[in-house]
Amino acid sequence: MNMSTASIEKRVLTNFFDKTTRHPQVYLRQSQPLPSQINGTLRLVFLSDTHGRHGKIPLPLPEGDVLFHLGDATNRGNLSDVKSLAKWLGENSFHKERIVIDGNHDQVLYKPDLDLMKEYKGVARVLKDEVVQIAGGKLTVVGVSWNSCVSDDYSAVSSNVEKLRNETQKDNLDVDLVLSHIHPYIKGGGIGWHGSRGLTKLVGDLNAPLHCFGHIHWTRGVRQIASGSTLVNCASTWNEPVVIDYDSETKTVKMIHCPFPKEELENSILRNGYLKKWLSEDEKTA
Image (cartoon, rainbow, N blue to C red; front, side, top):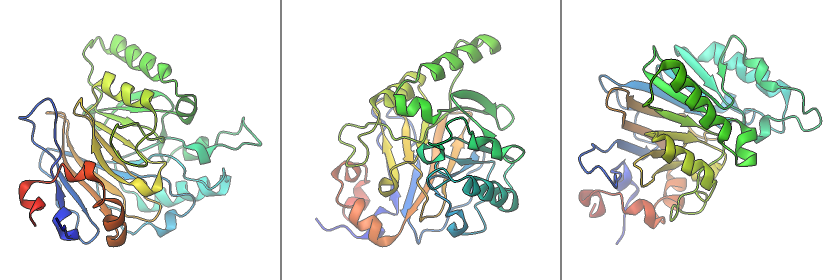
C-alpha cells in the first residue's frame, strides 16, 4: 500500500484503556499551518535541543500560555549559548510563563560546580526534579533534572510529588505534564524510542496525560503508552516549535502540531509500522 505525505496530515492515536477518550488532532506536515487554539485549552509551546542555534528558529514564535525549553540550549556547555538564549527568549517570547530544564549539553564538564541554569533568572523558571503548579494553578508540571536522567533514578521526583500532595492535602494530586530531556522507552516504538524504562515507569506511575522531551533529534514525533499517556519528542534543532493544546479540566491532549520537513517525514515516519497503526481508516486508503 502506497501512502502519500498528505495522508499523514492528521494522526489518530489509540488510547488502549479508555476507548471513549477523544483522540488529539495531530499535525505532522510542515506545510500544515498551526490551527487556532481550541477553546478552553491551554496552549503550550515547546523548544528543545537548540544547541546555540535558537536564532534559526522561525519567528515570530507561536503564541501560547506557557513556553518550555527541554534542555540542550548549549553546544558543549558554552555559557555564551545560555546567555544568548536567555536574551533571545526575553526579546521574542511573550508567553505568560517560561519553564526550562537542563540537558546533557548544559553541563560544564571541566567546572562541575558551574550552574548554567542561573543565567535564566528573571527570564524563565528552571525546574530540577521539581513539581510546580503554573498557569493559575491549572497545570501541574514535573521537571526532571539531567542528573536524574543520567543516573536513571527518579526517586527525587517521586518524593517531591508526594511532598506537594502533603502540602496541598490532595492525595490524588494530578500531574498533567512531565518534562525531561532524555527519551523514554517504548516497546515497538521504533529506533530512537528505546530510552529509559525508569522514565516510562515514572510517567505511568504519575498517570501523567502528557510527557514532553527531546535529546534524540531525528525521532521528533508522537507516541503513546499503554497507560494512555501521550509522549512527544520536541527536538527543534532544525524545526519549528511543537505546539500542544491541553484541556486541564478533562486532562486530555486536544491538539499536537509537530511539523516535519517533507523528506524527514517520508524517511522517518512512513516506514514506521508502529505509527501506521494509528492512522484512521480514511487516511490508510488516502
